Length: 416
Image (cartoon, rainbow, N blue to C red; front, side, top):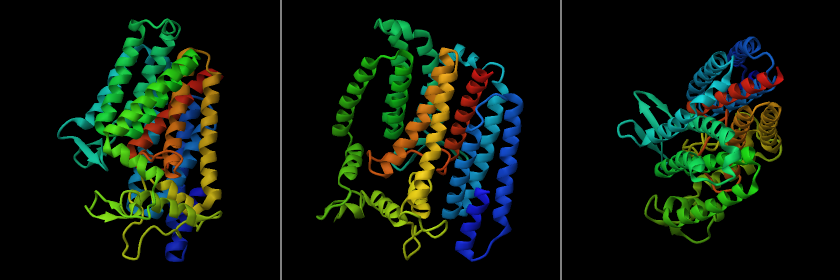
């Protein structure tokens, strides 16, 4: 119903009439998620009943907004959602008997995480987008392997820390060694690719699972200290990071500064922080109730986009303008309910691996949402990662459907 209403609103705003295409999209969504629900009922009948509908609602919101911004991208995103649902069904069918077998292959998952993160650095297939080398391309297909690498690293951390959590407290090098080697290698690759947003995400996931496994705040405090020291070093040695922090603290200037994009002196809001400032204007323009779906202003008089990469990095700004504070807050609440259900799954699990796996998947989902929304709202420096299920991007959609499948597998076993 929400999908049909959303698409109808866009049609009315654009063409002043209702098209049957909006009902067609809604019907396709209904059939797709009905099929996913049937598969889940037969394979994981005791799983948490809220996770799949919440994922469906988030994808519907994202697809509606993406269609409003560009119909061609909406068709591609729709195909990725279909593929994501198929992958979701495949994961729960294959692992329905006992997903805990994954624990036996923890080192394979750890090495696979490094390999997936390293792939964009390979010549010929690696591709640099917006200053970060995150993508691989083969023919006409683009994919971000780091999204799957994140999941592989979570499986490794959950399995390794479940096995070693008691002896880690003793501080022996042979117990900390494999953990630090694989995690440290992943962080080095992320810094080499220039993907600082994912580096922050991986670091947070590592700390979350470490604390969930050991319940020792001193470990977390020590690694936060290392993070602060490392952040200061990266800030001093990496112009890209220094520019992001400057744009975060001082997006507007009254005096002209040097613009590296054109080699001239201009106001920062017209150069380096242009994207951030236009995003803030978009959010402010939405007010409390929003302009309405299809009625937002995202292009200038010449037809050029006001906010670059709007459907990927900054889609929350578009949602906030067209749905207002009420709609933007409602979207955050949907994410909060998803995270609540995920942590309840972790608490209900009756073995260490399941608890840590569910906690890692949920915390990764929550932190990714916080990092991108917090960056857009200037709570933290902006990093270029996607808003789960809502932003345009196939690799993100697929990895998040695997997160849903993993949480449903854990909850099914716990509830059974």
